[in-house]
Length: 239
Image (cartoon, rainbow, N blue to C red; front, side, top):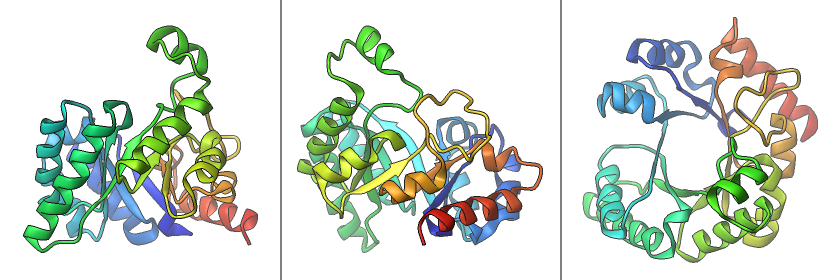
């Protein structure tokens, strides 16, 4: 079950990030590097995490015209990450072009193709915010499923979605479509800026393939114990 856990390195410095990786090592499945850390340190942080036996989920959420995102996907093929993402709201053509470019570049380089997943609706967004501020008339569940189905048709490996939409996506997109789930909070943990959440065990029970967990692990007084407790909670609900 530990391989399902992706620890979010949402910290501002290389030193803080590597301290977490060195402490946890391969007790978790991978580490997420997002815009804050990547912009502060640059691509070298990917190599530094990899040196410490850490797989990297590069969370930069590309969202641009198809040609630009395809070019970005080609670049990522060279970086040695195991997974990265784009925004599904960029549309079918943007995603399909990224899929095509990534496959071609990975084959040309002779490297394993990273997983390419699409972000649906951010877990910090409520239905009211999505409808009033973004102008989407569907419910969040309907919007997430529509984006997930489009991502699958475009050839994406899976999607990022809140734990509340896991079962809907699984029903619409089948058992082999990856679901990466942030908005994970162990029981009694603070919600922070997350609005659509479940516990780790509930998310895995519902069909999540990967759980992205940040502060409940990285801010814990004993990070390794926090990880072990999460693994135990997952196993207790999924035996």
